[in-house]
Image (cartoon, rainbow, N blue to C red; front, side, top):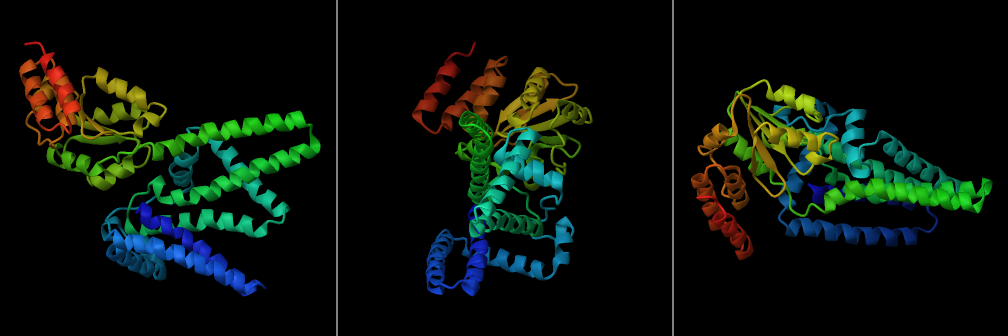
Length: 391
């Protein structure tokens, strides 16, 4: 979907070029630009076809077009939508916390308002400099693809991910940069050079500190989280009466494990997690790469360990904690031996470490980890750990 949605940038491009063709006096130049855009669009479309996504793209685009012509289909029940989900929530809080915040700031509402304020100042500054086309182009680039993508997800019944609208980020950054330049220019008219220099440094440092969070989270996570593996594991092992929750990722879990139906941010506080786990004898807590970024994310992780929850490393960045309200770790470990486990060396190694008090069981898991290790280096590490076990 990320690759498919990246092509949404062509919508405002062709719209603006069409308007330019109508009102421009130099239509030959506009036609040359349209030709260049058509070539880049053709390359993008050909890439999608070569990757084998042409059929799905045509099918989903046709269904979306039908929904646009019949807007009442946006309000269909989840089970009637193509992917049988509710899609993104249409509210200001959802847009603020799930769309804007993860991409541009950490946890501060103040930072979010400052960023948006700079973007508005940038728009005003471009207008004041009579850069009308640039101002409107950046604004349309930022808003139109985002709205179309959110509408498409609502039509499909698919959860939202920040990476889907990453193609709009250059426009947002350009407006923010224009806002910084505008403030510096206007401050220079009414203040001294020293004050302007300090203002520039403070703004640049503030932007870098806050913005790096969202971008590095997206680009540094080279190994994608395998949520399908998590959903399949839970379907095979979680009982209907068990509690299943995720820390900072409710929509994703709802999608890959349909029995889960929690609203966004339902379990961002330790107190909410404790209340949920107190409702059943056995619970499953999914802890992913996004969980530690909550203010109480690490605190929740520490509490689970202190309560004797067993950590199952299902993937590079995802762990599932198996928790028993009135059970000790040894009892939980004994139950895990009867689970349907995926074949994964990291999972076997994590279970071997959890079973240190039972060397015979730990040895079995280490042998499985050695057998399924991806290379000799990892295999050697597991052999060293196996030899270090107490007889």
